Amino acid sequence: MQFNIRKAQVVDVNGIANVHFTSWAKAFKGLMQAGYLESFTLGIRIDEWAKVLSENSQEVLVAEIEAFSDSDEDCGTDAIRTDNGRIVGFLSYTQTKVHNKKLIELSKLYLDPTICRKGLGSVLIFRHAVNRIISI
Image 1 (cartoon, rainbow, N blue to C red):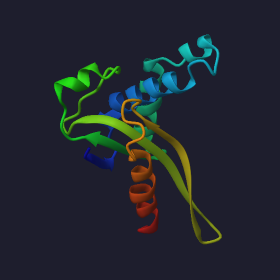
Image 2 (cartoon, one colour):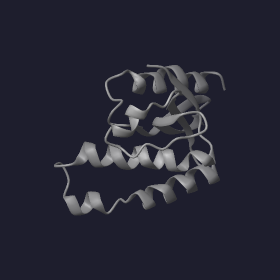
Image 3 (tube, one colour):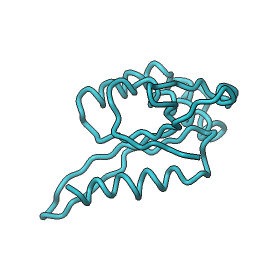
């Protein structure tokens, strides 16, 4: 499976929010009270990511599947298409310097539940986020 990793743009808000919403609900179902989980709606996630991306308060990378097939529509999530494909994961982080050392703080790493165990999380962290920090 081929992934395209790129810096998120404001137009990616719905795709990022959808992955966040669906993966959160699946990961914590049965571990947290249903009322608490249900309080985090897709609309809340859209607002959250619109603010993050418009204010540029965090670095955000998205992972897309380049080809979008009809079978993806049956994957159990409401897939959001972009001009490039379907967003299937993202990570966000902040970076700072302390005593002339670069530090990165991972804020979020979420993957579409249908994409888990394919190595995408590692690719996002090690090949892309860390390389961006090293090159700065």
